[in-house]
Image 1 (cartoon, rainbow, N blue to C red):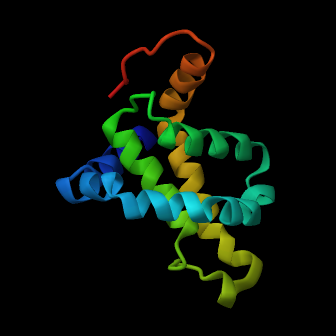
Image 2: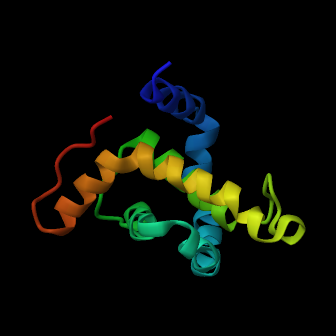
Length: 135
């Protein structure tokens, strides 16, 4: 099975009405905004050169002038929420440094899935207008 098929399958599972409502919920968005810098600081060095793309994901998700593809937005908000959430598959307080592995994997998946939107966002920020979402 191709990686794209897996990505599409995961995005399909996340695109229901419950997921969309959660993405639009002010408490979800507020929680991400209040916890992002601290959580990001803890995983930044584990992301290698991808840390800049994670910062772009965050900016893209909260940019009111940018119309992100709906499925991509759900994946991005979900990944950012997972990063700031105290609930993890590998809790940091139990697994120490290894506890960030699940956060990094989730962020790397979101980066891969959102790559076309990240590129579109960069063009948008560079003043090249707002091309339509790819989804």
